[in-house]
Length: 414
Image (cartoon, rainbow, N blue to C red; front, side, top):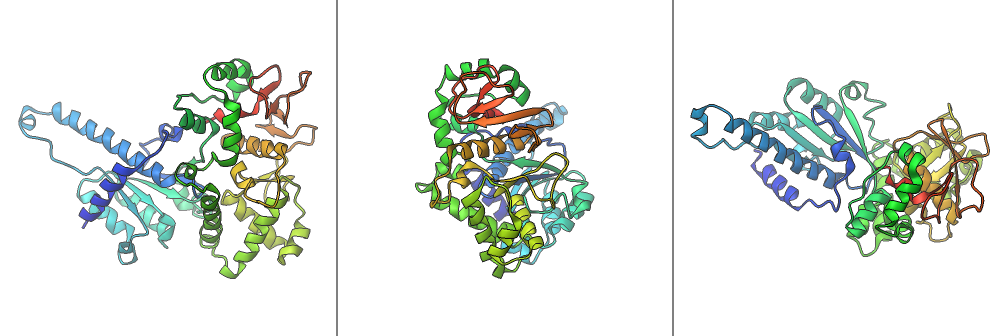
């Protein structure tokens, strides 16, 4: 039964192409038996999954070879039996309209399979029950599956969340984009490293490459891998945005398709105004929805990684946020009727770069952001003649000085 799927696996793995090895691959604990890779539409989850399958298969086969060589003399006289360790499968396959994921996994385990990589799992109606059944029954099987951000792995499926280790795959960082564009190997830094040593770090990088021209390009098209493949990045990104609304939100949140127009209009309003404070009553009137429903839709846009919501510390949804940002600068530039202010782009970049691994909040002080309840940050377009009182990320700055650090360097956090 699995021969055709192994052929598909071999073809896809051999043709999988990631222009750079994603740092997340080294952060995954492969000893865990149920792993979710969450990521927004368009960030490269399928290529990531296939590349992981390729690396895991290569490593595991080498381990089996070594164990065979170190075995008994009787075994050494014979070649090691071939075993298919890994298998990638897409739940879009019509096979799963008739058979369960458990049936598929059972057959795979019988043939010696150890790692099952599953794409588009949300297309399967009983996905969480199936995963739990597989986890309980097959003690030596590792399942790695892709999940959209709105797929309720953590919130609504408590049984599955307790046994799932979740990792977040984001779009390209500025560091990754710079490595792809230049061929250089540049390491990432922690926020603490950057805060303490930004002047020396930025000087070392600038001795190898001038980052600012690349940074300006990254803000326009560097976050999504599709910029490498498409001659018209904006068209591809528009498809991605519509997919997020039509599939990630409507399908997973089970919203009536008649409401799609209201969701699209809501997103357009935010594309016109963000970053901005949120006037929920005014927006509700414009899209003709109740205030509660409007807030839910705003939450769905956040969950699908189309927008970000900035809250004061100790406040969160369903309370009104202090400010709304578009999720990343590539998306922020998708309203062609508006010229986005440079400072707005810089703020959007700052929030997107930091919040993946740090807590970012609004503050009642004069600063724009507070990070981890510790660092109070401002974001500026140009360097100040005098040093600033608190840390300030400067968009046009090449190397750091005093409390002023180059904004682009915050793109080196992963």
